[in-house]
Length: 313
Image (cartoon, rainbow, N blue to C red; front, top):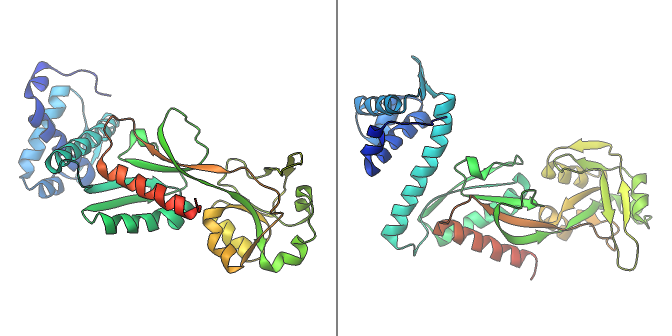
């Protein structure tokens, strides 16, 4: 990591240092001095000279240069992540200053779980783009939880229960977990009277969940029932579990946002609907910063309105 620098580095000040950070980030992202120069509209010599000067002043090797590609060192990669964040914030600050923060603009970088992203976030992106055509969206839909503190992500949508309560977050909605089966299993499902009886039917486990075997069912006027199931099929994606259930492979627990259309069309049916499973929250999570760009605020407001309509509130 970079720990010290001499006085000449500090003396460069403001925009001079900002320009050199821009050169360095461009080299890392393009993988070459030539491509970085083309992106920036300057000569390769200027880029190479300024990056070399940066390394000299900090007495740290930031890049590994080969005949084929330029790659960051460990210190260079850490420095790149910080630089990219600084440059993005600087760009947003200039944009906000120029436009008076009245209208969202620029590229919104967000992440969301794949299933919720496909079912909810993508339609919200479409509505967002229609309302704010000056905005672009770069979305990563993945069931891997990306660290918003160590990436260029400006907004992370979390579905479930927040493990880190220190995060800056806003709850935009809730979801229900539903035990469902294919309509073809209706005769067998109709025989079930108690949650403990679901172990007599095939079960499909969603291994993307932290806990996919133990379920707590509750009903007004009754004691909660804890059920541990042994699955016949294990799948690591909610949409894959949904498809397996639709094919009649067994019962499973799925979030309401992933199966609303299937329930409405009669492809899936609720199992023991009088017994409820725990609900979960849907949160917008932000990097720690005093400043939140207009584009982020606008998208979160739109998502919250979309969730309110989806849940019929």
